[in-house]
Image (cartoon, rainbow, N blue to C red; front, top):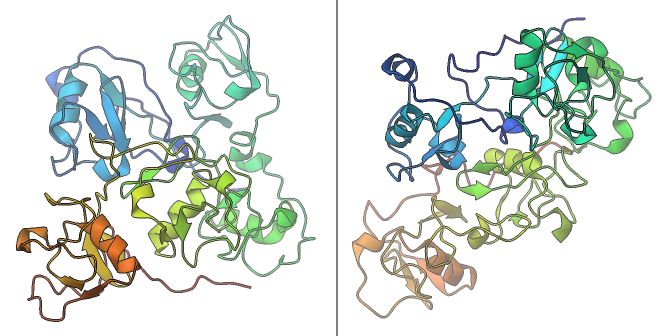
Length: 410
């Protein structure tokens, strides 16, 4: 049976983007590099919001010299990343697929373990000279990929198998147990088994009762290379400045966002606080499809713990353009942002400041104007000039609309 073809991993070779499932990869400090190593990497430009702050925020890298890495800064924090890379404080993450590192028929997984990159393999599926001398834990299964892969390639490990865990055993195509066709939706040409992800999946809600009961559809999509095994997000997933959290909730990968911080057509009917910041993959997918938005922009950096701010004074600020009801409110970049009064001259009505309105505050007082807008006190002026009268278009930062088509439902 054909599966995905995984290339050998070259830890310090060509540059590859880290997948969602590997956002927690850590790398041990490395020694200073020479000019040839630097020249081999395209660091990009300094267009990122956090460029030139002395820390690398490009999520393709990992190490002691990192700041707050996000996909938004991939290729857009060049000076910082090049500087700390040259000092040996960061290195490239391993290049890998959605299922993690896969080689010689073994799913090595990712580097999400607390003991990853310490030079010893902590995965209890292996034994040999390359293993740690400390106690082996099931929590480290398929989560110490770099250490175990290095020892495997050196011939210092042998594979003894065992319980591979949700992130590992299923990564080997020949080992996938597709189950049977006892599911209600089997034979409809779409995979309904939530263990998988990819273009071969249904767009409708995924149910636990269909796990292992849509074999023919899922096997056909797998053979067509339209499926991968779903790998839960283990660390904070940040997209467009929004911290989606991880996939530690009970309702992950069901094609519905269960995080109560969001609203929209992509939401479940009954979101619970217990799933706050714990349904990252579903909510991020809905966000990128434009079927959810944040219920409160101030929660953009919040996760399940309610932590995270984007300013030194502790106030929450909107740092990426906010679109709601077809209106681009912009960001909180203005001098008078977050003072409880709307200073954007495109608006009028209750909630506006009594001071002189300035063009420099156009789309620069998002939180204040959005609050007044939601309270029903503001209207958008019809004669604000070409620069001010931006129609309900795609967000310049995200390419998303605030309202999208209804996703397919049964």
